[in-house]
Image 1: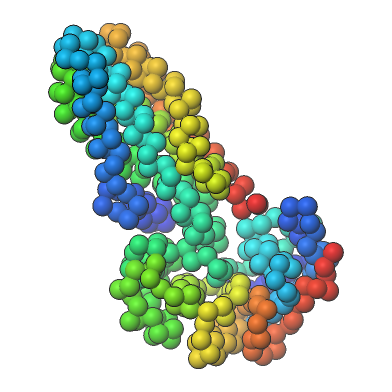
Image 2: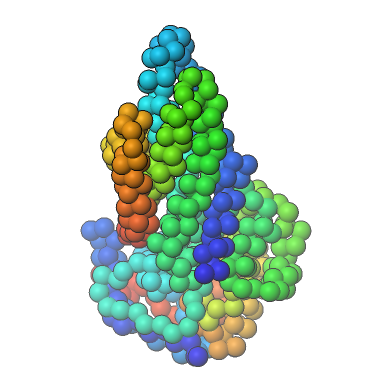
Length: 218
Length: 193
């Protein structure tokens, strides 16, 4: 248990903005999309209010891809997971902790940034609330998909670009239900988003751990 | 619990090539093993098989006791100061007095230097410090003398001798000459497929 906390503390130190591997770039990217969208489609308030939520979802999805390049690769190349294995720390535990740290490094800031983004797009209070809840339910799933893909592509040349492409189709269910919640009243779409997220979070550490072990063989 | 390391009839395949086969050895507490051979013959692969990081193509390895590995990969965060980067592993390993190892390996002046600025030899010394501070029973060392100066090499040989004297096991893979009194030599050429 204390080993898990040690791992989490290290991962947070690495991934948080201000840490050696972290950056505020995903956040700025997210805000930039919300800022540019009204310029692109024009100042039609009704159109912005109707489509703004979906744009924020797309921005969140793309922002979640940005940190993937350094999420697993550096530690794999440095032999960190080999040293863990010799200490009896499984790849699954290491990946579970990294999932938590990865989510904490990008999602809370993204949720905060949703307020200025919603204001820029002129979203109503009710829409903003649904959007926030949806992002809260969906971002763990995005983080899980990102982690599994980052681990799978860590040993490939040009893996980062490929990771981005691989995340997009896997994230589509989250996007459908998460953004779909904006169009339908009632909590069912949000609950489905949360269910998909939970499923992905449960599977991701095992998929990523297996990917790390497979990476040793080549 | 006494350290014990036994390898039975192991073979190693990398890609399509069979590197060696039929390799067996047994290490009792206090014994050292010197794995020799030319580049690319499978020394590092043997070390990784013993560590359990690579599956042998045939045969099996049995071990009792905690294992520590020092290879060419440092596993320290490049952007952190050395002291902080090693600190993570000390906490993980439950080491309470890291200063002794730093003194032996002359790392004290380097503790504030970010890892990425360290030279090859200094990196090796940092990895050895982590090994010393963990206090494990079986040392697996892959080319430990790479980059070390003469003085540190002698110190390192003394450290291995002390470790074995205390009932530990050391497996050292090196193409360099290294003084390991009483070590069994495993020349991988003899098992080459």
